[in-house]
Image (cartoon, rainbow, N blue to C red; front, side, top):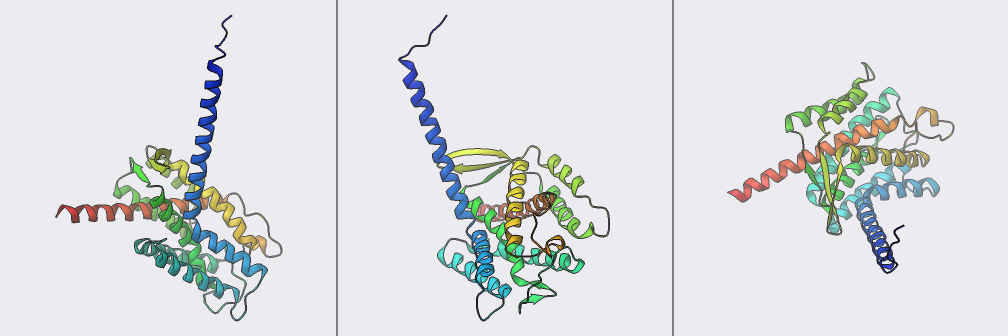
Length: 280
């Protein structure tokens, strides 16, 4: 019977302890970078809770939420927490989200029952910032974690796929819902794609499809928090709040994919532009 050297055992224990401590430090660093990237979404959720628990004077709740979102965006750019290019991306997502909101409220998918001066066809203008907050997170995390994409599909595949996913949010009310076919197509197109990110000087990588699923799941959790505080209301929540159906995770995953594809495409276009400028 072979016995291990007792002198080596303390060294092994120290190595294991060092590995665990190092992993915890990296996890804390990663969590901190994620927290900083979520500043705008956190402010939105905090505002939802504050205005729900302690109504503010002078303006209806939806109008206060719009004022808070606009002020927060101004402060983030002013303080350098957000770049002007990132503000442009967020504005684009606000418009994309607002169009989707106008359609969904019109057909009765959900509603905004409270009063407000800044409502357009039943949709408060602050609602576009709910989508813009996803773009804000992606832009912030991309910059802070020094994200790089590996095996990114060609432009001619990415743009039609993102367009088809977005259009399906509208067309599935009048035609067959192809979200699952689109999900399969996403897995096929991005099966070999990876996202590389940096934490504390160490590079990590994750399958891109897995990142879509994780972000979509956490947005679903955020959606439950938002509906609890009355950000919007599904028909089954009219009398009392209830958990958002888990099937909505698929919708959020597809929305995250659209958001990610738009941000990634814009960053690649900008990167090529800067490269061409430097080559001149």
